[in-house]
Image 1 (spheres, rainbow, N blue to C red):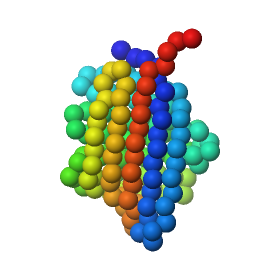
Image 2 (cartoon, rainbow, N blue to C red):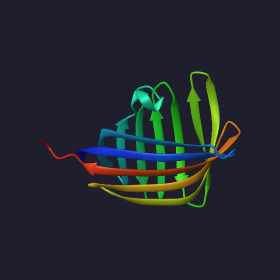
Image 3 (cartoon, helix red, strand yellow):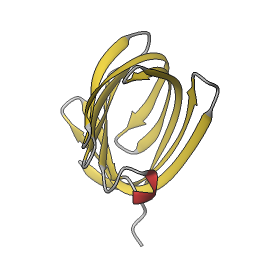
Image 4 (cartoon, helix red, strand yellow):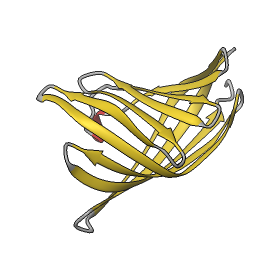
Length: 142
C-alpha cells in the first residue's frame, strides 16, 4: 500500500552554548508499508540547506530510522533509552553521529500520524539537544 501525504516537520536544536535553532518544513511525500515497517519519504527543500535531499523515516516497532540521501547522506537510529551510532557523510568527509533518545512517541499507521522525539546528539564531537515533531496527513485528491 502506498499513498500521497503531507509531511510537516518541526525541529529545535539547542547547542551546548545555549544557542537555539528552530526549523520547520512542509512537503508532499509518500507513505508506504513494507513488511513490518512504515516508510515516510519526502524531498527536503533547498532552503533547509540540504540541497534536494530525499529524507526517509522508517518506523518499525519502537524504533525509528532517519535516512537522508543526496549531497549529504545520513543514517540515524532512534530508540528510547538507548545510545545509537549512525553516520553523517558530507562532501567534506564522514562524521560520527551518536544519539541518546529520551523520548520517542511513534503514533503512525498506514493512514499517517505523528512522531515525537527528544534526543541528545553528538556530531563530530559537538553536543546538542534535539526536539523533533513530524505530522503526516493523507493528501486528498483534488
